[in-house]
Image 1 (tube, rainbow, N blue to C red):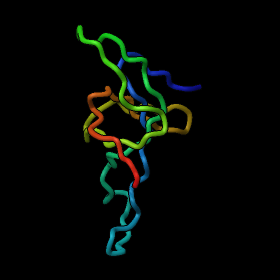
Image 2: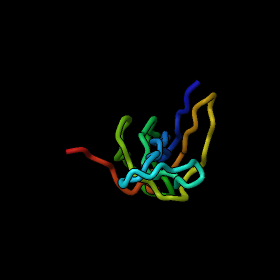
Image 3: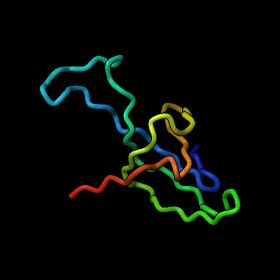
Image 4: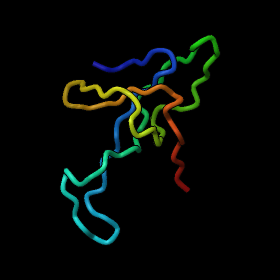
Length: 96
């Protein structure tokens, strides 16, 4: 099975949170914050949303930063995903 988003929705897979801090302290699973960085897994077709045309600005495979409390968490098989609207994505992460 796979998720196929509709309209201006984007399916994200969270990137695992760091296990240790920059100073070398190992974090327990309870101490880790929910990461806000994810990889784009699927992108909806865009279209008309609330009377305005929406063009999709993200693509599958890109790494993005999204709003902390955005989206709906979905579990499909063993994998967990987050379905968000494109306007909940704050930035695309580009590596130098």
